[in-house]
Image 1 (spheres, rainbow, N blue to C red):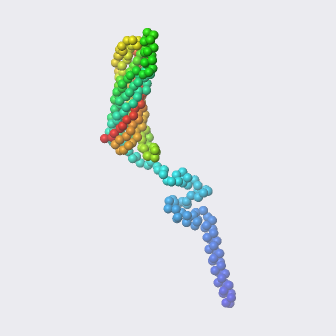
Image 2 (cartoon, one colour):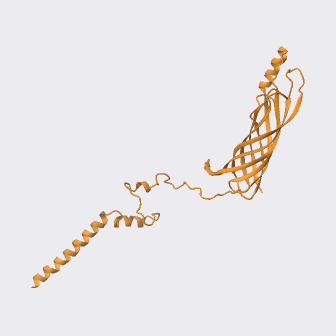
Image 3 (cartoon, rainbow, N blue to C red):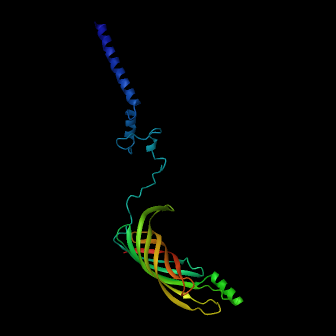
Length: 269
């Protein structure tokens, strides 16, 4: 009776130990079991309710290879805002459309943004012109050969108007390890182009200028690089389109364009 009781005691203990070992083995073999739960507890960045990424089937959730030093940040909020504040700009630049003149611009603007995307601005651009090497070569050829070789020359002296301002993109870039915030905008509007027409064709004669005014349409694009909440560097490319006489002050009319590239500073009040 005693030996039978001992056998029954050891048999019961063996059965309990065997059952516990089998249960632990089953839990360790299941995905998301004890082993993975322990690993999740050791990882403070593990997402609640999801096992940490492994090297096999869960690798699609592991992005540590993309940024191992954790130096990439997501742009979530606007650091520099435009809505509800007036802006003044002053820029200088070059005229790009006259084949016979070097053109230099002074461009001033005043604008206001109703929202972060939409606003308006008025502009006034003053231009100075002087003969370039192409024109001087033609004039020299005419003087040496007593030829009337000069083209009819139209110079843009100033332009002014109003523009609708659309800023669909606000982003940041890394420039020499410094974060730079910028807006990419587009403009469209209408205004007036003031010009003067040099009607002489013989380089041995004095210039005779005829003043002209044209209604024009304007389109443009540019960037604003924010230096602070008040100041920004501005790059602007704008073209004006108008109809004028093809061969001088009279005759058939056709479309002309005048493109300017300017750079300068902008300040918000």
